[in-house]
Amino acid sequence: MQGVSGLPVTTFQQRIATIQQAVTERGLDALFVFSDEYRPGHTLYLSDYYPINVIEESPQGVYVPAQGEVTLFLGAINAQTAREVSWIQDIRSIEDLPAFLQERVDRKGRRLRIGLAGETLLPVRYYRLLRSALDENAFVSADDLLHQMRERKSREEIALMQEAAHLGDQAIKAALARLRQGEVTEVELAAVAEYTIRSQGGHLGSATVLSAGHHTRLPTWRPSLKKIMPGEAVLIDVNPSWHGYCSDVSVTVFHGEMTREQAELLALSRQIHRGVITRLRPGLPASFIYDYFLDRVRAAGYERFFTPYAQGMRAVGHGVGLDVVERPNLDAGSTFLLAPGMTLAIKFDLHGFDFGGIRQEVVVAIEEDGCRALNNILEEEF
Image (cartoon, rainbow, N blue to C red):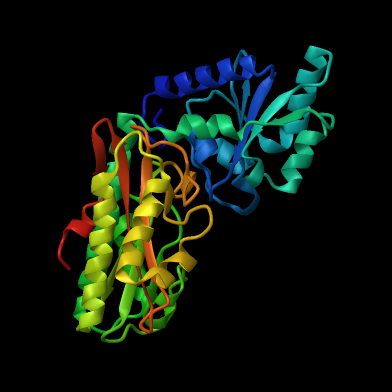
């Protein structure tokens, strides 16, 4: 049996053991973990199965009791496939969840106290399935447990992310090669990048952002039929996954000739982005990234092109792993300390110029003695 990640079964058994210990320490009867195809990280981390979206069939839940066997819940079609893939033996339809919980209530002779992880993803319908067997006070938020466990990656996980990063670099190179060949639309260029990822065995961790010209004034954009014209800025942001583990890499180039101002701005953005990566090390507060960016753009006179687009939870980046975007968030208020095993997308955005905007982004791994970029694309000349 081969799961999505290719990691050994013992890895998942160890994760379950860690959760069961925490469940016991918190005075819980069990932990119920929920996610779906679009943000699969919590359950994929435990089941090693990635559900496929066939309308109602993409929900995934993992029930981890304080002691005993783990149960995996899926839509009926995905459950059939999971029996050939996941290491978990007890696999059931998610529609059976009320009866499953009621049986455990009957065994205990009382209501259950269950930790819930993934509640921000949980649709009302499945929440009602859970609640049908439990009273108002039965659920306790336990997202923090999964976030803490997933925040720091093992060497094996980082090796998979390194492969995903390589796919991202290759996808961008292929898109740039096609751009140099002549007339092309945003959506055609996105298709070249996505084909490169797919044809090498990868998957898309999230939607491709590809914008040109005035569309780059905004931090996100769905590729359109707009033709990319000479002299326009082109922002390419791809998010491949390899055996479930993701990357998040972005570059900005100009199609054809650049003005002197554009060339200087592009060089400055890469210099600032590279500069922060060379300075990252364990023990630094994560807010150092935002502060470094702000100091450099303020000194260069570009603060008004930075601060409106570097607000909110993921202002200058975020964690990356089984989800393209996961905890921790990187912003001005990120006070947590960088630690070995963290894998972070470091993102530098400048938008609102007459020509549009610029983004540079790569994934880095925090190591014992510093920081290593998993993507190499920004080290190359293009």
